[in-house]
Length: 124
Image (cartoon, rainbow, N blue to C red):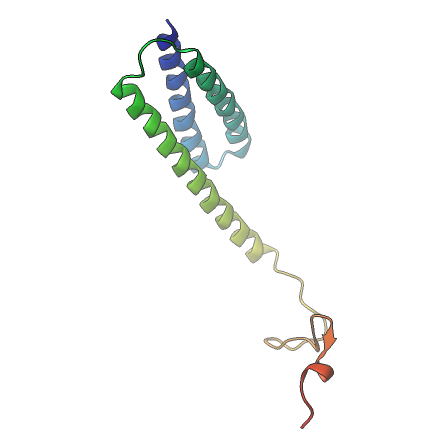
């Protein structure tokens, strides 16, 4: 019975991971957050089910499924990082950084950090 529960919890995790991948592609942030919370809970339940499982070690097919879930989580994290970079670049294009008022385009301002340029460059 415990192994059946383990297989059931693993199937839940696999389904939620597939759903999250689809939501990430669609860009549905509110649904993605809800699915992420559900995935976190399913992972906790999977961990509890694996601790309660008694008997012989898991079969090769179960280990392969767990490996696929682990790889899917890594891919999901990488895809989230990519999506974050894309969003940051998009925001930077729409909301450019504030520039100093009295500098010419392409030139640095009169101060570098907190030291005036007068004291940084040697006199000639």
